Image 1 (cartoon, helix red, strand yellow):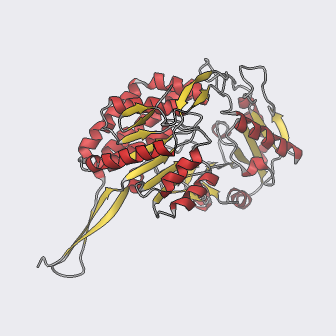
Image 2 (image 1 turned 30 degrees about the horizontal axis):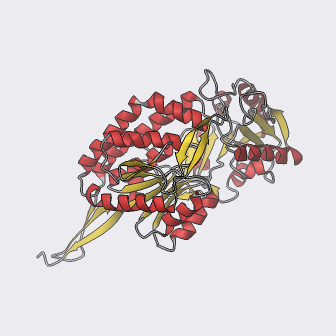
Image 3 (image 1 turned 90 degrees about the horizontal axis):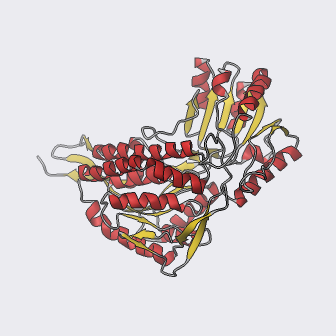
Length: 466
């Protein structure tokens, strides 16, 4: 059995319970994992709380040395971890390799950024008075991460909080705990003091009670959550009972807009689900996009040349089937795909699908898909597409392609989202602040702003100095 990691000890659930993890591409049982309960989570919180006293007193330079070690070890074990990630998540091995490298970059970044957690000297209003601010570690952080980036999301949060001087309890997604366990082994190998990092895998059934504990515990200072808007709202509401800080990275469903002035060859290489294409180039774009889509190879993520892996679980697979059915039932046209691929190694493969004639009434327009389905919406004017793109309260990111500089600036300012990519669909990097607005989240991850979620700004005022 794959255990939890609490206070520097590999341990099983106090109830000796476990849950299985499956390869979504083959249905192979990859192993049993400790099914942690509220009691186990309380032990982890206690360990993190005790470890905080010493970890927070280390200098930023001392903490940085640990983060550099983790970065180096991630790169040394990149192939090993990527293979685990690909097996339990299903994503193609090259993407898994890239994700491990992405994770390592955050430890390198925050190792140095933690040394630049500057305060301020503020000019005082009177003689004999001096005002300064300092940034101090917030405390114990509860980290909840999703299945779609099993190590990338852990790294983005844990690197920042460790650099800030915080300790943590991490609950990974129930579909992908093995990658998190592999990461915990790296933390142990790099000599992070006991209790600073704790990992408590748990089943889907136990997750709500642990989330409730995180929200209500007086020993948790911050919750950092990446996941659905629905669950994020529940955590936000519960966290109010203890008035704790909560950092949320929630739903996306980003609009991807292709204007007449775009480079079609560049704009065709996308990974978005909701694609708006201007009328004059719509047909040419669809032809190019379908041609590229039909080149994609579907299969097991760890097989050579695969571009599209399986859907993560049956629940998500059925959701994709329902989304496509709903769209077709309301008049959408399936240009390619639109069906399951039952003759592969499991029942969770879905053909890369392109839908046209999609309207805003369809679920494929309104919901984040998490599958190989592209919904194409035709528009006529810039004003029309901005109105469509800004509908609803899910405002993580927006992307558009144009070679018109004035249009680029105008649209970037009028997309009401947290991040904008112009002729660029890959905006997430350790150097840049990642995060949405409205119901897509609270706070930023990465960049110098990534420390803000895990530090408290303290005012110190000196009097009688004249």
